[in-house]
Image (cartoon, rainbow, N blue to C red; front, side, top):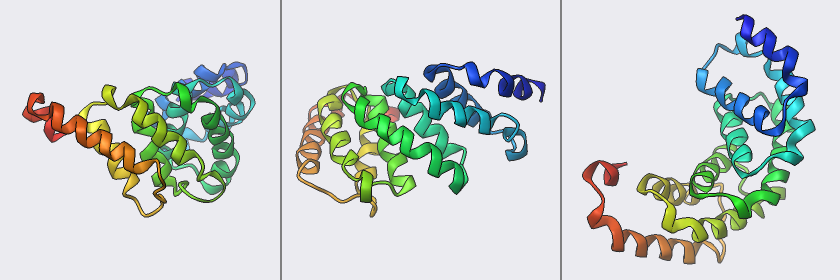
Length: 182
């Protein structure tokens, strides 16, 4: 489509937020991989340039889009280290949705260990700080992510799970059937 050609032409001028939002939109559109290739390489290149300006939501959106777009290994090797480095700097600013969407993405990429394994305890600590603002589906997503084999549980997981259990005990009776099922 012509819009992707135009996107490729303007990608070099995009801000961090525009790059993250564009990646999110391209992933949400579920375009054919051959269509994505018109603009995706340029947008990913700009992501590397502007990543230092990404806020918490931008990082969460870029990670989600990277997982949804099923980037090839060469693209992942360039983009993921940049996003994960920025994640380290913004994790303390993540809201409940950002945390709940980032944990499963790290699990899906198998990123929970190795050189960036230190990010998981940071995210779990942040999850505990925002747990009272998490919806039931966000709680479930976060807890299920921590159960993935790629995650190594440390001393941050137990207190988070205790906090989740207390929240569920305190609030579950007030959740609608639809909310509780999510």
